[in-house]
Length: 71
Image (tube, rainbow, N blue to C red; front, side, top):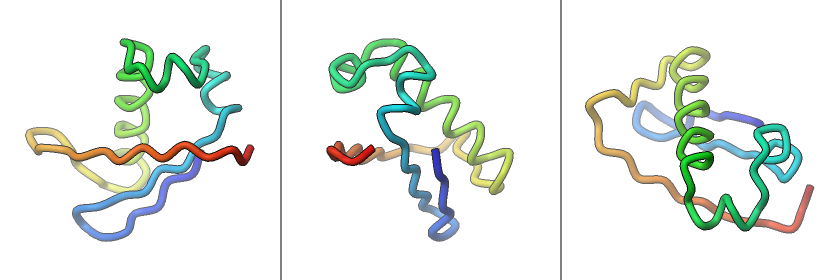
């Protein structure tokens, strides 16, 4: 997983199938938004806050997920 802070209001998180597998999430489950996917996003946001100071608490979020075939 790779996190980039683009500006004060935007980050980019890039992860691949291997990252999903480490969290026991397959691609189809990821796309159907089960609790495991929500937990994955929460973990990513905690990492972004801890490592980059990107605070999301009490803020409205927009998440754009893009699936690619690259690994």
